Image 1 (cartoon, rainbow, N blue to C red):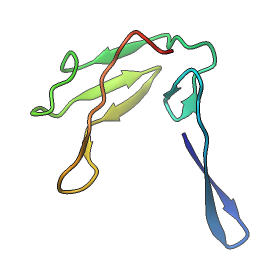
Image 2: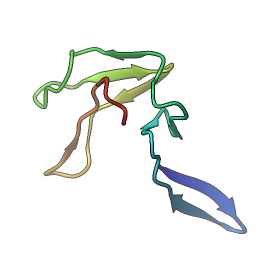
Image 3: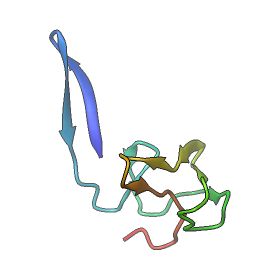
Image 4: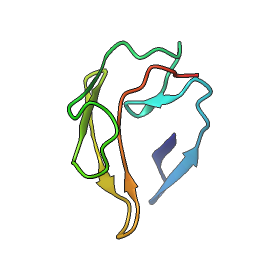
Length: 78
């Protein structure tokens, strides 16, 4: 997880490792998200997908002209 916050006249960021996973912009506390819906039903790199996890919408996106960040639901959070 990357946390960003204001510091003086600028923005700082810190990277944290979430032992039980990261979801909806926060570390998962008990390792089991309560609700995950995947509009395309899993990994599909040739179709835009949207995952709704605990009320937050997370969409696939291109990191750059070569790499894709694919979002999908899975059950093993450890």
